[in-house]
Image (cartoon, rainbow, N blue to C red; front, side, top):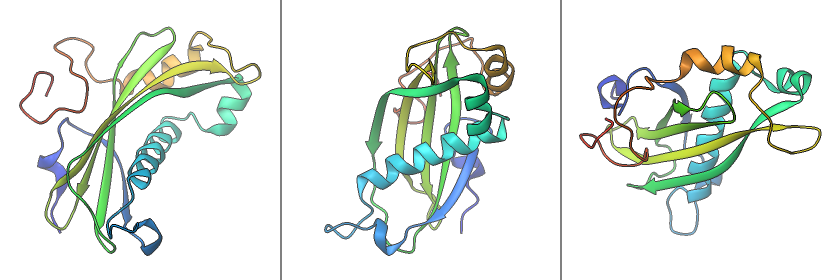
Length: 165
């Protein structure tokens, strides 16, 4: 298996490894697209938990980061038994209400990038579902994980070498 270190679009991703299971494969004999979206959600949640913002903390604060937009670019297929690593970065935020994550999924057998994606999130009040300002705990928890807020930005789904990479 390949060490994905040099393959990431950005430095120091939060990662989650998995293996494509039989139930992940669809009638076209490859991993169903919804599985990739689920892996992105799982690695984002894992990152949040690693930053000290788990579901219990969300409930205690009556706040959560809710997905408002998702975009995925499927680049190659994966198949049952493939070893996969999903990576995520928090790439921008306004320190008030919203933040954005980028994703990259790599097959470890050959180092191929299978997917690039992006999600935008808004802070909501759990009890009402309404948008609310980021609480201090979110600023302190997510803030250190945000990539440099200075410099060019892209839409998070283009390839290496494009502006922002």
